[in-house]
Image (cartoon, rainbow, N blue to C red; front, side):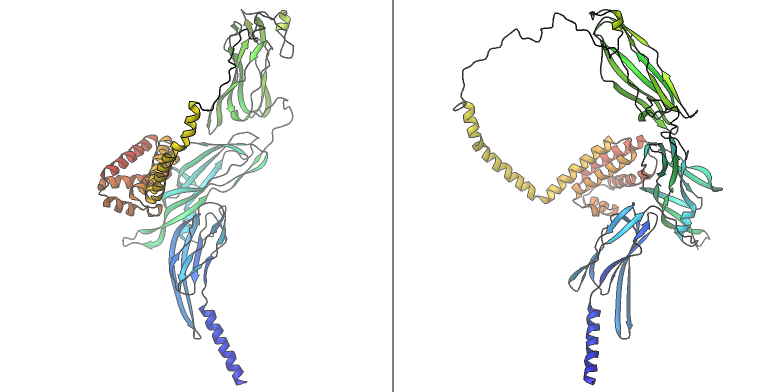
Length: 590
């Protein structure tokens, strides 16, 4: 019996030793579902120490903290417990479902991997209140507000959404980045230019704030019922006061990153009334004028004139069709050329649209252009209105007669046109004969035959030479990388020049051009493109310090220009400076 007990104890000890020796390496997330304005903590835990820890690529997140390393080593009842943890703090870049890939580590010569983790990022959520939390202080002193001009518009009635960022004087904003743009589903939308906007003073909930207009958008609802306007979300780098003071008694500021959202807005879109709706109504809503005019009313046959159908005013000018015209059959009419002269501001679309028809009369006579009408829904009176044009008579002074009386000249396209005979009715019959030789010619043994026969043999040495050059070029891996990066740099610099006047597209293209130029010139990868590393490598190439400063200054301008108002003159100066700096580096680098 005692022997059995000893065996059981020995078995338990061996099992415990084996279990303790089993390696565990796993990833743990603080939550699997979070709002775009929340933080996520990822812990990579192991029960044995290892080497060469490689975290995953947090492509869809911004790392705001970490890696923080912690180690715990304890003995309980003679059993050693060891745990080592690498912690990262992340904020999401956009909404969606993302996968945090595997991390790896080497333990006792073996490579271990974690299991991928799926994280769902939703729209912004409410943050719990904690007066001692810097994030809570940030949430109480900075607000992103969406102001909607009207919450119960008619179908195709213009409404505006103005996004304002309110900042309390207690905090300071360093920069911001748009991480989630509204998707205006079921709306026709147009953004209004807000460049060069200045910070203004105002109030928010009865308190004094500073505010900046970030975006203005005009929306035309395309469906009736309740429609959702999604929130705009920003990632803001800011400083908030802490409960600590410096030696002079001033409050110390704490840097935090705060994600703010404008919040969802719901509008109730009313359908246009059915009572009194004209049969030819095509969806025009607003306040309009209607005009039909011709470039001339007297001309000769086969000459052309322009017939213009034009609607002008304020409303959804781009969202309806102009009425069609009906002309006599003796007037040849071509497909109209549609033109738009429309500007969009906070009041909606304003301007005019027109269809220009080219009309060519074939015969002498007088041809009436009957009046046509245009109907629209007037928002002021909330009723339908109809506008009609006057009848226009086209007088064709000279030309062949169509052989019918004057009453028939006034017939519209529904009447048949009389058959007209003239001297050219047999013009399609050929009167001249072109003869060709019936003598047969043979391709065999001709000069062309011998040239084509020898051509493949002459091409073989050329193909061998070209193949060797291509193989040599393909083997030059480093050279291929340099040529590819240099080609991309020229491409992006060209794109930057084309994007002058469009701030965000210009600076994105300019930054890519500079990065690819560095990759070509310094033979470095994208992961090494830090300011210190660039400065060090350019100094090694014996580039002047002033040129290096200019180059890094341009890179910094590309990063900051997306968040600050920039005019076209500044963009042109940055482009010229970038081109000049690249030229100087080429001349000085050794």
